Length: 358
Image (tube, rainbow, N blue to C red; front, side):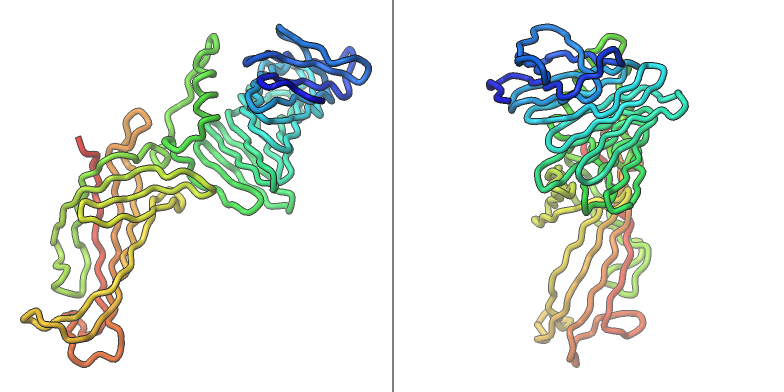
């Protein structure tokens, strides 16, 4: 069915006369309603859909589907969803199929026996008992499931099962659960959070957990050595520097850029609840007088830290560890690594303390 630019299309493929129905509100532009036995017609106010109906939008359309128990779904631009199961408010059984597009779901607590709310995609099925989450699917197929409140269970087409709680995401078919940073939420999500806040009687979403709090900004970093086998990193030694962290997006892995006032810049990623990045380089061994010995080595640094204090969804303090390993490249005959055990490997552990710059 052709759809004019800016329209939301609701195609009724198989109505269920007399059964439960869902209300559909056209939030942007106009709505088209078609059935197997009637011509498509414009709908300028709230209308109803039944089990078997299909809701589709063009590149600027937006619709809200309100289910019998007042749970609701928004269908974003360039999307198509099928309402394959629709129960009454008492039964609470809803199944949605999404192949391509964006959906936002706010689901009331399911209390009825055998109640279900599912979103079926080409790569997996999301099932909930009462939560707020989004599903974004692109051709490929690839789908991103993100949870903002409550818990969502995702079962993949190959039988794997994941449980996602608030501010967790997974990209299927190949991804694993990961943190969804609050300052990297997609535009579609931010729009829906704002719309939810405007609903009568709306309850704001709780702030993100510490590991998902916004880390973007300028940080005063203190680095303190706690273990070392060399005088180059004396135990108790302290260095101070300023870092600037900035979200780099989530395509598909969420990353942060980390820029130091010392002049280097690296890309960090999320492992569990930690922000992690590494740096590698080379060094040239020198004599005590500073002249080169002609021997070189490699240096590996791994930084791990996570927020432990937040305010209104923004991290204010983070802490973690820096591990350092310096290895002299063989053969070596002149270089003294000044290690306590006489080896050619320097190892040090340093505590990282990050405080948001005022």
